[in-house]
Amino acid sequence: MVVEVRQPSAQLSVGEFEALAEFTAREIETVSLEFIGGRLGVRKARNGNHGAMAAWLACRCLEARPDLGLHPNLGLRVEEHGEGRALPDGVLAPKGSFAGQGAWADPGTALMTVEITSHDPDTHHRDRVAKPRSYAGAGIPLYLLVDRDTRWTAVHSDPDPALGYRDVHMVRFGGTLTLPEPLGIALDTEELQQYID
Image 1 (cartoon, helix red, strand yellow):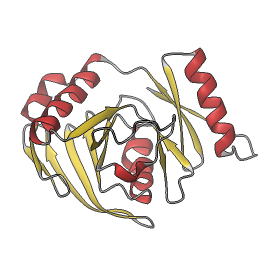
Image 2 (cartoon, rainbow, N blue to C red):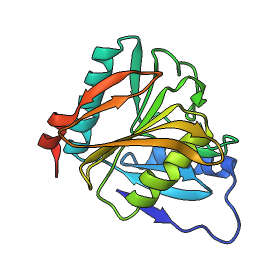
Image 3 (cartoon, helix red, strand yellow):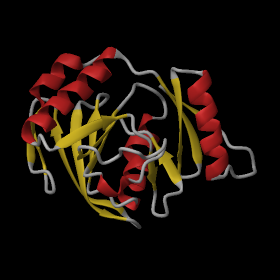
């Protein structure tokens, strides 16, 4: 669940956000903060079906590409100039890509970010609007959205920092979605139907 925190009239700087996020992570283990498009977001703990979908995706990707790792809940510096801070549900990248990086990693080696929707009021803005724009702005080749509300999977490709992703392919749960290059992985989404809330 994400709870939007309205900003006061003064803009929060990236440095102030990072200090606040570090404090929150240390003091409240079930809450994480994001900063996307100048907007502060609060991510709460996810449920078991959300986790089962993430595990399903990790298995499928690693079967097809054992050279890659699906890094869960890795903080990324996003947006065109790296001024945003996102916590994707997963980042697919070559193994060891983020070793030695701090709380907010450079997305340069990321091949795909993954979001699995949560049943909360901010899902539409966060997962379907703000995050695709931020990930495209950071030059991440692919964005995979597993949308539990609509029961669709969507792969976004061809990132443009000014426009977002130019190409989106959608498949209803149960169909096969192909993740284009640089991955070239076909995902049979039939199993996702078991994890619908």
